[in-house]
Length: 112
Length: 112
Image (cartoon, rainbow over all chains, first blue to last red; front, side):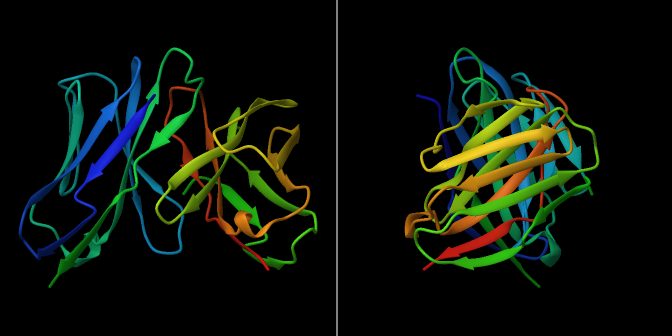
């Protein structure tokens, strides 16, 4: 069964304190791994897509990396406006039929 | 922002009444999806559509039906609402099955 596990569930950082969020997955044939940001009361906002192990994507203070078993979202020198819930999702092959499987998310709080 | 609107944004209804949620897109994307988001469960796929009049079930489809008569509109119907269907419902769109999905602002539904 396809599964996505995110850790930690919650993370508190001081402004400027770099850290990483983890997304571990098991899927029968990875077709894509997606990172989203979700603010309270809003829909998820797309950040990155990674398709193969070794791939990396960057956007401002965020960098996503992918291995065969997990993905990391590295946050460098975070600011309070980076506070949000970060969601990871995988799209598997075989019989997954276009169905994204989401993790439960990591709630990030960046204090000034 | 992707051109996705959902209506209504908030709704309170009574157990046993039918409810229809609407998703409208201006991006002309082929794929449309309905998710529900609940604490402890994350985002779960209810139904999706891969073209006009082409739909399929997701992970939690029991008690829900969908229809898509036009590219831009995807309707989610709760035939007889139950308290377990109290949730936040998100619509999403994508260009293709391996592409990122873009989410709407959500509808908060309360069934009393």
